[in-house]
Image (tube, rainbow, N blue to C red; front, side, top):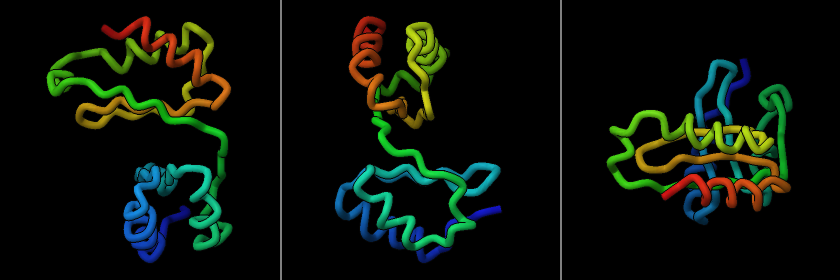
Length: 123
């Protein structure tokens, strides 16, 4: 199972986060998913061995829906927003929710349509 060496994690934390780059590390069953802005991908992949990399996807955009703190007690928002995007043919590459942030990773070509759909479905 590919894993991210501690020195790579340290590099990501020390360098990329200090530069206010988009950077997310998520532990999954197959290893660690690293979400970066396109400009940081080559910097990080150079520090990994080829067997540690399952795949690289470029050209994604992140849409972050920020909600009030009451969202933690509101059931179904992620399902509602995901359903609204899917019903318009917008593929969600990744989605996650943490505290007040609901984050969608989409193909760049879907960004404008996704923003319109979300604007129509949010108060």
